[in-house]
Image (tube, rainbow, N blue to C red; front, side):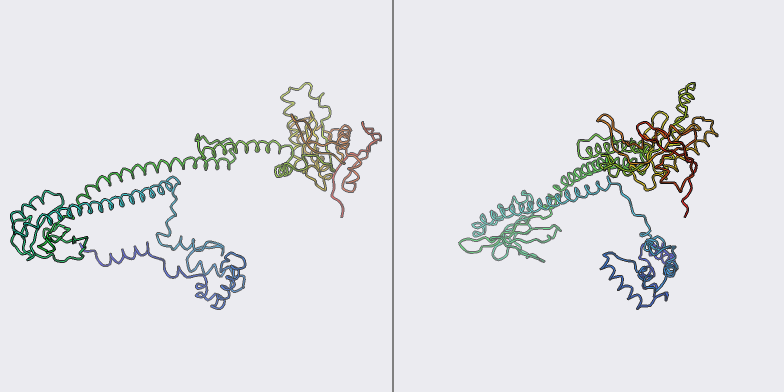
Amino acid sequence: MRIPSFLTDDISRLFKKLFHKSSNNYDLILGQLLIKKNIVTNEQIEKALKLQEEKLINLGKAVKLGHIIVELGFASESRILGAINENYQIAATSIDDDIYKLVKAKRGTFIERLPTPSLPIWLKLSLVMISIVMITVVSISFITLNRQKRQLYEQIFRVGEASLNYFAESARIPLLDNNILQLNTLIKGVAEVDGLVYAAIIDRNNIVKAHSNLFEIGNLFEKFDKIKKVNIKDSVTYFDYKHASGLKMLNLTRPVIFKGKVLGNVYVGVSVDFIEEMINRERLPIILTTLIVLFCSITVSVLLGIGFSRPVSKLVLATQKIGEGDYNYKIDMKRNDELGNLALAFNQMSEDLMKKSLMQESFGKYIGSEVLEMILKNPESQWLKGYKNEATIVFTDIRGFMSSSAEKKPEEIVDKLNEYFRIVTEIVLDYGGYIDKFIGDAVLSVFGVPVFHNDHIARASRAALEIQKKLLKIADESGNELLSSVGIGIDTGLVISGNIGSQVKMEYTVIGDCVNVASRLNALAGPGEVVVSSNVRNQLDDMITYDALLPQNIKGLKEKVESFRLISFREKQA
């Protein structure tokens, strides 16, 4: 059945569309496109290309031609994008977009639009190992077969040569006596020798005196036709030719010489096809052996590839889990090799990350993210070893806590205390301080160490007022009377901060007179009040409103301490 010409044309166009290169418009470079659209001139493109080359030399990296054109002021980015989008029917939004990728996805050939194949690592390893094994095995088989073929050829040649020499030596006297019977008896057993097809004894008149084919005796010996190449080895002449029967033959010839005179020639024909048959017989077991080796190699390669890729896949999965924050994820892999060691190291890393995460999460609840980040970046810094610096201490305590909680259940007391601690902690951290410790129902907060802020006194005072405001508000809403009974004392001065304790237990804390003063001022504060020292008042005098309290004796200090009730915080007047 003949296909109509219009169908063949359609099929041809379809294949061209699927597999042939895209049109010339697709291959136009940006410069050619902009010239074509009359956006820039040839001279401008040449200047832009020259500048692009200079930038490549000076910066060591390529700058897109579009950026160069915009930089030189030859065209705006919007005009360039408009020309590209119009010409290629795409929707690029910036010169930095991968224009080639967008064009290929929109107008590329079928092959170009195909997604890049993603092969698993076990398959890649298997293919590599299989390729190596196949090339090796096939090469060895090829070399072996060629070697065997050459050896068999040499062996048959030697058989033919031995027969030829035997006939030449034994035919001298009978040929001299013209004893045809004895000559034919001599070559009678030719057919019994594997590979020998014929033998003939010819006198010097080129008359056949003896032949393995009796019908040739007495005839004129016919010369061989279409001989391409004649080889001579010692006194033996040999060449390949095609016999009348269609067999490929190797003919060997040697003269019969008696007392220096040539009496005639002996011819022996060896079947080259016989050699090929022997090669084929030898080739079969070699091919079978090769196939078996290839099958075993492929099986081993696939198993090795899978065996190697599975641990890698487990490591990839574990990495994803760790990246998601699942530090409890462990790799179950028992191998006595590098991958096993890697799995153990990965599990150890996961455990260390979990400990660090727990430490960060727990420690961060007390010292704040800013302090925690500083500690983790430089854990051996001076803040651990101890140093002297200015700081502001905020001491928060509940008035009459023991009496108010005497008749309450422990669970209720703990819940109300935790709500109080939560509010104080959140506000202290929001203002850049950290919680030094909880002492019963009291909270010791520090501003200015270990992260120093120039306005640490203002931060502490603002935080104290914010704490009281929020505690009173939530007390009214929730009925937690403890929140409305909190007093706060604040003092500022020099403190010594660092890691203090023993090998069994250590904690980061501050020591100084202002810590004790803040604690004593806290005792002077009534429910909902914030009492500050003169040091705080002097620093914030024009920023706060306050009421002066009577000077008080404080344990440990000889002179009375001035104190002030902090009422509100106002911005400094310009």
